[in-house]
Image (cartoon, rainbow over all chains, first blue to last red; front, side, top):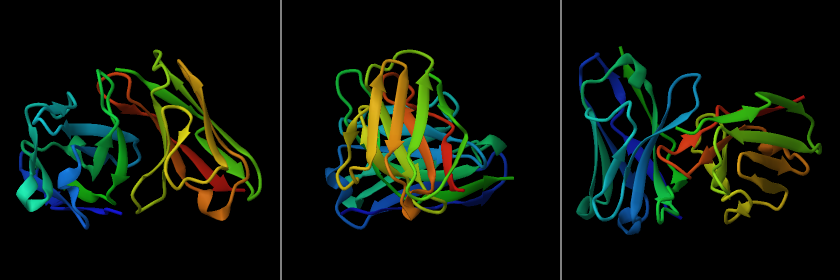
Length: 121
Length: 107
């Protein structure tokens, strides 16, 4: 079993930047699609971004133009670069493998990491 | 975007009882509906994908049904480890969206 571990969260001022990392205890390079999903305090889950193996990237409207997802296969790591952070970006950020994407249908997420908290204040 | 509405918000039940959770979509998602279990401080856990398919390792007491706009997650007999928050997710259209969750708590 691969376990995903997120790092890089913390406290940042509005307008600031953070880079989140997602690594695996196993070999996640073989994971074709990866995603970041967040949960704001007291709120539900929100899919923030997905990256496919062909390099295609997708973003929620709420983060488009501010966040960038990338992956480094040699380092077995997926990243989320977050710029121009706002208070509404405060959340626990989970990385997850995205599964089942095909022909216009989007993925489900499995497994997930426990998440890393980001506070913008 | 497709809005998913889960009901009830909270379900208070005893171990051994049957839990029935509902997820309603604002537009048809065909059968592209997923269920997760989430406990505080833990990673969410995939239970059911595409409305009725149990994920690997998920016990048979968890079952999913429905299509189009109305879906149900049933836990046939609650065990102590099943008390958690359950989320549905649609993957029919972008962005993938989640419901607000149903908390299953011990009565």
